[in-house]
View 1: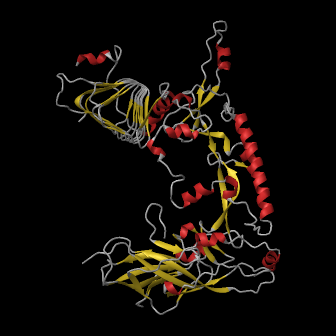
View 2: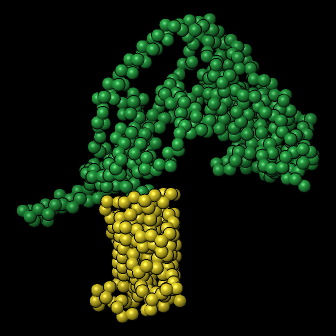
View 3: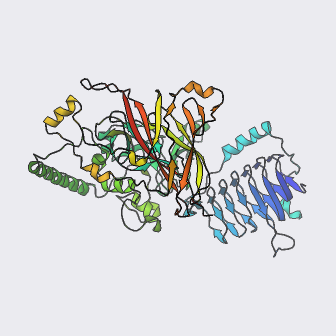
Length: 188
Length: 442
């Protein structure tokens, strides 16, 4: 089932989650149980210090006009995926310090910059590009622009990194960083 | 029975003719009448903040413009703002490189954050505060002095008009009650009346059409056109209310413990010209035995709202010409429409319901009756089987309502005023309207 999943040192990945395809998980990232990360259309690279909470789904969808070799989906550092969110973006890059709140949905044709917040239960389906620091909130998908990036969840990450091993079976780190992590993907 | 999100299937008829679920009604234990929010006086008990629950005397509340001193609402989405703490980075001072000194310098700073739309007080350039509550800069209305001037002027006008009116109507002057009402205090009479009647507060375009207008108008003194000028709004205070009977000025109670409760258990499909079975549950919430008879809604006696000089106090008031203003009654009361294509065969029996006994909840299962009216009994509850006739010409569609009235015995436990005769047992009436759903054609 799980083929070619690279877990870098310092990452906390629970065993009870679905990881399919070519996935790389950066150091310091915490993945809660029951998470699905499915790389069917190409590899998924998750950078450092992300939090991916329960029941969130990150899917790299197959698309018709797929490049060969497929472009990876790169998820920047310090992103927070809250409980039950779903991300289907096929664009190669998601910025850093974004927050995907509970039950939010980001469809295939949405580009996301950095420091964005997709509010709880907000659905983004239409093709669009979110500029940096965009906040989407409320039942009517109101948009506003934040002045600064969302604060990073360093304390929460530290806590999770300590607590998770006490209550969950974890996947073993299987990839040792010799060079900086970004370059280690060049082999594909 | 009333539900939070479902329609109200059983509605009781208030003394004034309004039909409401039992949860929205009140009961006056002195007049022995059902009252609703339309025909009672709402009294302001105290002001408090719904967020920090701090109580505030009304004079202080007025001084603070009915707003809480320590809680804020988000200016862009009106969600309550939360205080967040950050550790302030000590400025790197080239002169002092000592680690100990640096530790002393780092301290917690606080800012406001909205968890709904992620607005922060930093967005509009409000500096972080060294204390968690209070201390936020207060903004002064640029037209403060002018507003105060106008206020003083109109206060004087009001004073003068009041005096003139008083002189004019000295003889006809009627008091409205001993208590200050909600409308007296806030002056929102029209808007509130419209809200209670289910209309928007004012006529005009719905403000949701112009979205950016709403946050701007929320801070009425400044009305910023620019998002960057939206400052946190001090949270408006709420009032604790108590409800008083307009006739006797006593505090009202909920009817849950005084009026028999009717619930629909089930009803067969309604077809024009057919007879179908309706199962009802009656329960006696009082601490005394209750006799219930089903009566024709038309038999319910007209309510006598005119005051009789029942007590010395009342007759004294009358002799002092302090008669109450009863004009509101004509304004709110309405005749209940009891015509319906549905009718029920009323069994000619008086049902006796035992008093409420909380311990009986743990008793064994219900006693089933072979009676053709009473299905089962269990402590203070019983289930009735009734036959509903649907008229031949009943129109197909939803909203089949069955009017029904109960005559029940009620024991008054309130001690009467000194001179009044002791009447403990009363016969009261309550009219209910059951929503039985839809009439289906064959």
